[in-house]
Length: 151
Image (tube, rainbow, N blue to C red; front, side):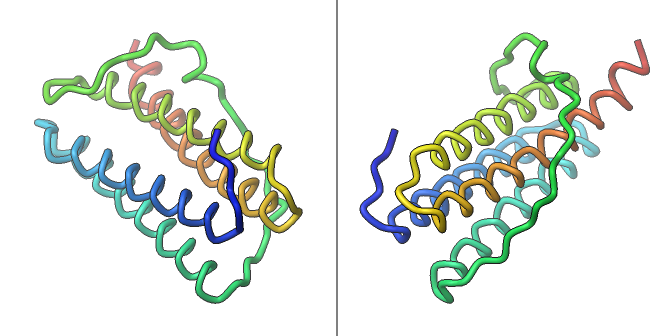
């Protein structure tokens, strides 16, 4: 687990993580043979870039607004077998991979909140964890609507 000397260090880490997530979804989109799946991943890449921009603004302006919103967890992704990223993934496999990735990001930010040295940093990490939980929920709803209901 990273140790942060300042809020800026933590924000830099989060900014880098969001860029990595954006790159991940962009690569999935570029490798996807399914147009609908490509569009879903392009949208998520854009959202991750939006998170990155939001974090950069927080860093520059040194202000952050918090939300008490709690995100429901369907836990669908918690019970699915891991899959590896590949260019010929099915839509189902891509959704599973995305759910698992968002769950990992949620856990990372939650863990960072738990070790944050001050309440400002803790609140930033908790807010980031909630953003990742929203992504996981959207993938779970998509999975439920398009995979589970078909079977």
